[in-house]
Image (cartoon, rainbow, N blue to C red; front, top):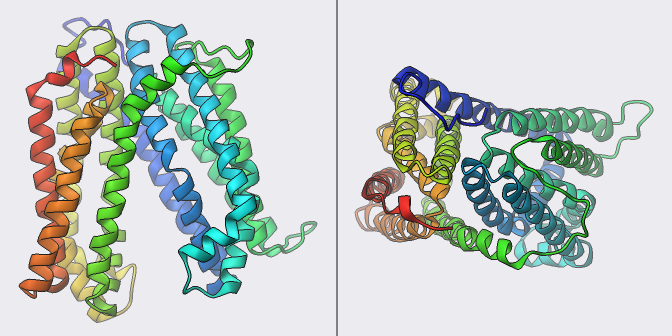
Length: 456
């Protein structure tokens, strides 16, 4: 559902504003839940093949994730630009951005696919030098098969970003549901060998994933052509439009650097925690898995903020962009605060779903209670960042993330965990302080309103 940009006073009543925000957020929340659920099912199905198979698929996905990093940059830039053009009623311009996003998706896929086929095993062997060579070879086989459908997968990812910018979050949700269903059914037949299909093991899992991505890419492309607010034409020869690509990258590159800095910070953070011992690291993983449930509402309302802020700025209505940004934040804070209450009072039963070890449960429960206190701040941080992305203000988010993750989180973790000997508890306290720090800075930047006059 695209935002109605011609709102009268009656439509601006709180319940109607809530309805508009929720209509955008709910499909995105469901989409994330689908991915989470299917990811668990996918892991369980491969896990039945044994530890080697599970490790191989995990390593292969790490390489695929690494190669797709630049897609996040293009996706962020495309979403913001399409939202602006749709808000301004410039549907042909939105279509031009979408066309360039698809072209870039295919080009990046061709480069990534070539790298995978030519050097996949060598790259995996270098990245995971201490891993059994047999597992590395199996992982290389997995990524080679998945890589055959990379152009479809990358197109799917970027077209979904474009559709969300146009205010259509239902179509990406539906496509994700179909892709996940095909993947699970394909796993069932191709991994275990249900007649008339042979048992292909890890290769079967890869083939099912490639088939699902292929179908998803086709469905996304058809949906793009049918969207009335994105008039994308592919009748003319396909060629790069340097001006549009420059605009996409001007927004997207800071977003990519931001994500890269988060991964570097997370790596250092994880290395410190891993040094605390097996029980501490296991408790950390369990608490993280439990907390991840709360990310879904934050992601959905952040996406609503991105779309609505971008579209209302495109319609030259910055005051409505600001109002819908604040309303998205308020709704996210309510939902995630409820999750925080659940985490705090039911910590042991929740973490007990992930492990039977009493020592791990006790430590993970303390961590979950600590992070429960940061849920309102996490909601605000995610949504205000989403609003700023919709305005194209990704450079501000970059500096806030750099200082938060690399200075506050990692720095405080070293002090609290290693110097003050607070162990894992200290690391999670540092995480919460980082969340509140970034939340405050995101809110401050959003409140100052410089993003309202940003040209992209």
